Length: 221
Image 1 (cartoon, rainbow, N blue to C red):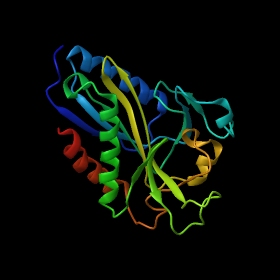
Image 2: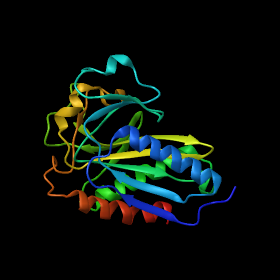
Image 3: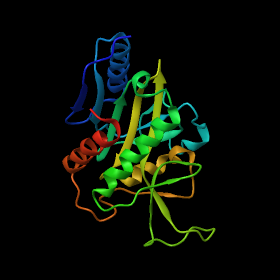
Image 4: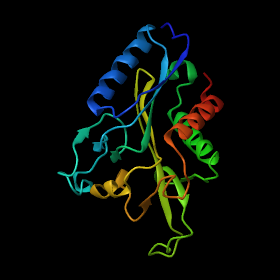
């Protein structure tokens, strides 16, 4: 299989319809496999919607009529996408980068954590809880007495012939109330936050610059 010769970094203005995004990813993955297209990272915002990953439980969709719900081929459960959230779709060829799913997901987490660090936010992994989390010492402890934590970024990928698609979602300034219609990623008892919710006057353009710079550290291109 011939590999594409470069990495394309694409940013779409406005709101991208989810079905159109999936169609574009499918076409890009096919092109990469055929040697006719380069790898791509595509940054988008979506209109408010919920997606159901391959492990989604119907009971975790709390308000099914609030926003459109799309069945997704990515791994994971229910998640929310909407304005103010930076979605980064990663169409990368793991045939040449290493066929190691765990390592790839770890690199995606590292990418998010390094991006957050640019804004002096400490993002952390949590065993058994997907995504990237931040401690909230300003909030009351959880019912079990453990410190409060909020989720700031989600990860959900799919592989086809060892080419990845779907990707990550980082909360910059979304309407956090929109997450109330689901149990995000099937994890209850925790909150959701964003960079602006944490008190940081960060723009989407700021985040895009940080995402690109840190992507190069972990994935090259």
